Image 1 (tube, rainbow, N blue to C red):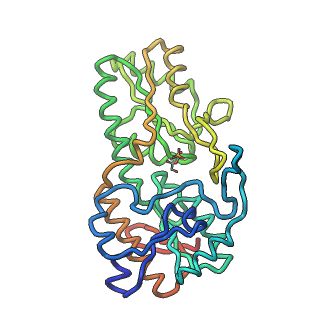
Image 2: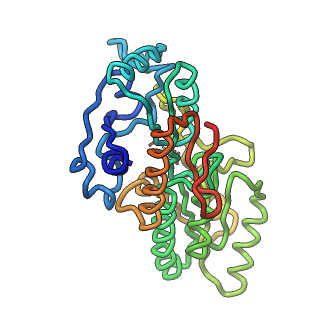
Image 3: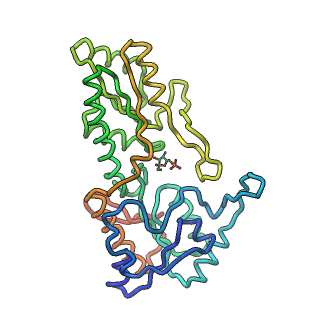
Length: 310
Ligand code: F6P
């Protein structure tokens, strides 16, 4: 986006550090062409990121190890105007888009760009980052296959994705998972057990199960790894894979192991698909900024770049 802004529109670009955190604290820096040259092949972000900072409930320690949340959205607006910005391009997931929506009500011209490994944003078929994470899940399953086969085990792989099952579904299909459990489709533990036993009876002495972290226990509760109270959504999911492996081992009597893939899914070099998608989104976001077409998020619908009201 920065290259398009400078080359095609003669605009200046300011990068805000650590997302909304930097907007509230007024931490920004000018981005020149050579600041962004060569970064397409890199994962992550040169500006830093935060999935916790919410200007409307800004979490800070009060000196007594307590987290206090205050509305600092006016500080965000002041930073925006002091930097003489015309548009704010917000890159992120559902939390980012909901905050962006509220900042628009305070008069900031916003364009959204959907970026998350969860692929759970309305208005786009795909978010960028998703394809890279699917590749990582698929490679992890390939590796689990080897050891599952050798040791005649049930291997359970737990993926991220929060409340959405896209990562588990696409990674699982790509690598030939035998059972894939996702939050969107209720499952029955008994059917899972029966399927593992059936494979075993048919001579398949191993099974690969892919489970999304957002799959619930039979009680209807989530397995929660921990809570991050300073975050917009404090729940951090994790542990359903371990629970499932224990159930299978104790009921089927087949040695079972769980792997929680965790933050490995958010690292490394982006795939070519993600690089192209991010570039297309960035160019479109800049085009919209130049037209002052605010309040929309860019997205991919079919093969076309489309916009949706935030
Ligand atoms: O939303 C992206 C995501 O990686 C989810 O898939 C995962 O549940 C969550 O973020 C993890 O958050 P954190 O990095 O704060 O542990």
